[in-house]
Image 1 (tube, rainbow, N blue to C red):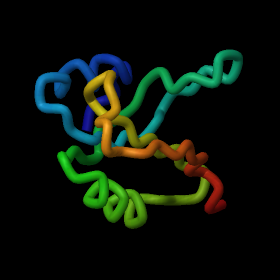
Image 2 (image 1 turned 135 degrees about the vertical axis):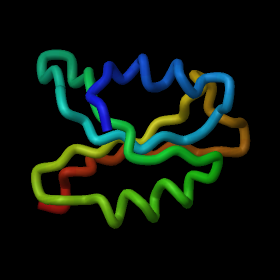
Image 3 (image 1 turned 120 degrees about the horizontal axis):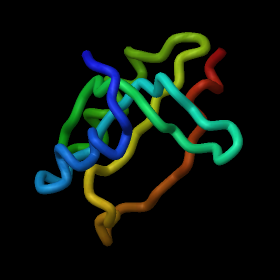
Image 4 (image 1 turned 30 degrees about the vertical axis):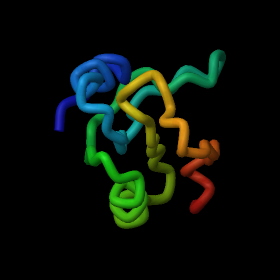
Length: 87
């Protein structure tokens, strides 16, 4: 439950190649970049992360789903979503 740089969280799991659900606590609007956050969950299955995200959503809360590895798996499609859309 500690606030960390997003890249620090990703590096901690880089060798595991898992999906991360992060509550974004600092966002840079000039670059549209999530800077800091708190790790809520991690799993090799993106469906697990999606289910947890649905339970963790709150008005005004920014959630970020990202793969810990820089490379997206070949059999995976990527959809960019703005999670605060539920407010």
